[in-house]
Image 1 (cartoon, rainbow, N blue to C red):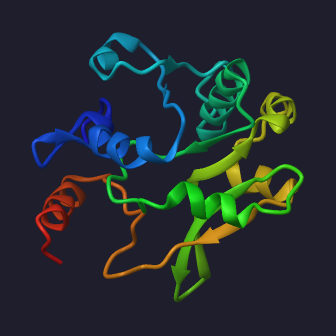
Image 2 (cartoon, rainbow, N blue to C red):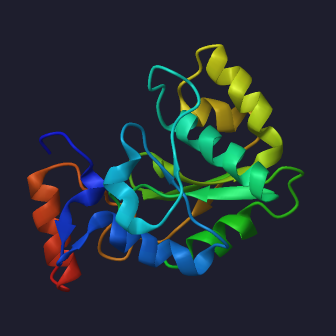
Length: 190
């Protein structure tokens, strides 16, 4: 997409991130944004901006760790993550992740959708993450682990499967063609 923050791209007159915030905020007690670099570019959102605490941009798990550390300071037991370039994720994301984690000592759940070839497609940037595992995550990142699914599988992570009705609700905007498709979806066109 030419660099920059995909979440700040415009979709239907608003940013992708604005759509994500609108979907997630009714489902959670508080929001924060994980981003590196100058946090001033997100000042108009009025959200805490959490930089990775692990150097070298080690990927999504570093963002999860930043969120878990922030949540621990807030006294929270878990966080839910969502990607800033995925404007159509389910409006019941959080309760369905929580339901899938019921009975687990440390609920750790990733979103998934049916996939005709693989059975299920995991969406590792959408998950329920327990604060109690943050020190283990920090140690794993320090040892070089970068794969979300490898870490969640280590801890018996579960999947919450979401239906696909016409399109994958975890469809993310990666190309100009994806942005055009998102505009069509926003307008109700298949």
